[in-house]
Image 1 (cartoon, one colour):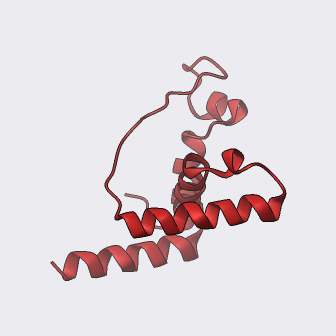
Image 2 (cartoon, helix red, strand yellow; image 1 turned 30 degrees about the horizontal axis):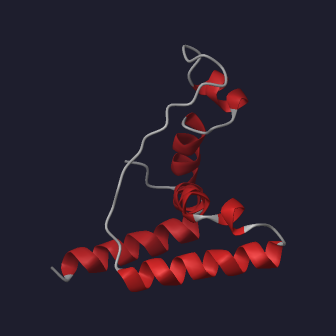
Image 3 (cartoon, rainbow, N blue to C red; image 1 turned 90 degrees about the horizontal axis):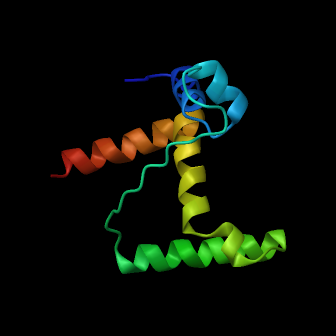
Length: 103
């Protein structure tokens, strides 16, 4: 399991959607071909509403349609941050540790 930001960046680069990174990380994969994984998770209505409202505000601030800053884009960026940003990764790990200890 990756423990440092560098480890997470390297792991994220292996699975990046960038064709150049894909060729470097996995030469056996056809360039430009990305394997997409779909999954579903449960989220309380209030948190979902707050997140989609926030994404709508971000879209407005950026001057783009909300369809360009939807749940998919927001979650992809959150995953990217968790894998590449040390501060975000530590905050997420601390929250997960608290969630596990509260059970």
